[in-house]
Image (cartoon, rainbow, N blue to C red):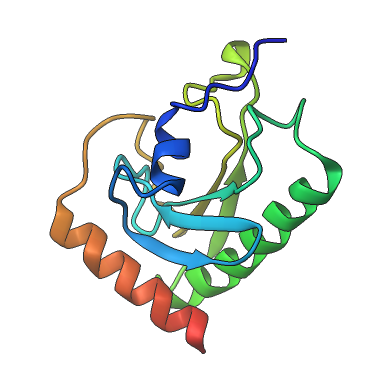
Length: 141
């Protein structure tokens, strides 16, 4: 298996070298808005542990990611008046993984509205700010 690249974009986000629209952080995980969302509210949850994907992450860190993804999903249902949630995690190129730091996609879904294809367009900064604000408010209760 290929070694973890400490210069991947998510590692740089964790180190504060690249800005993001953060919505949640705890000791083990970090969640932020996807800049190329497939739907409004599309959020990425990543571990702070360096792990390429599900094949090399520790079970404990994966459990933290899953708990944070649930927390984000519950808040996203409220913040985006969603009818459901899609969770996705890709491991290795054959699965569609393109950033090699484990990440879980949390996508609030509205009945009858299709997801955009991956990497279709970069979202407007104002929209990302609005989505992050709505999600942060929902996380606070």
